[in-house]
Image (cartoon, rainbow, N blue to C red; front, top):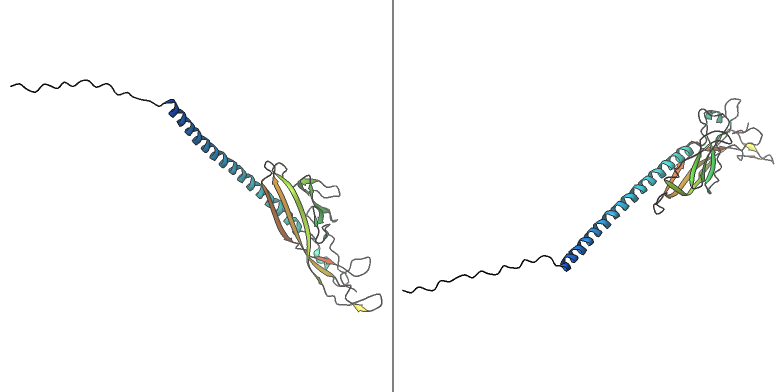
Length: 245
């Protein structure tokens, strides 16, 4: 019996193995560069925003600290260790408060003002303290005397003060009653010589930008109530007197 012819498997040619072509390689490199550029742009944006946030926080903190110091000073205007002498008693007329003075005009903003209150360890005579905007820096007087030392209140290496103003706002005025009336030039009795109490408030406004980035700008506004009200004596005469004799 003649069997079927044996099938001889012929060797197949080896399959060609292909790598990346030059075009594919260039496309991959370009895509990778786009990804790296996008990631770099995102990181640089985050770093810039973080830096801006730090500058903004530092500027805001310095503004608050400066405004707080100014507010604490203005609250003390008129503070006097012998304030009880302002009240008249038997045989002694009331004494005017020598410390209740300020160069801030009513309802007019100023960037340079002097004010007074009695500090411990300073001469008894009223000594004007001072706030001043000079060369984009708020300065404060820290040494008594007419030519006292001025010191920077704001740090010029951190912030540039664009505007600084203090406005004295008289809230209300009340005439205080006296036991006696006073006579005018015509001899008519009246109350024109009675003392007048004025309640003052100070409005402090500061605008500044960061020294290293002028686009970081912040403002602060605070209202400060003067604790020692101004009492104006209106009795005619060389010696201050609250009420007529």
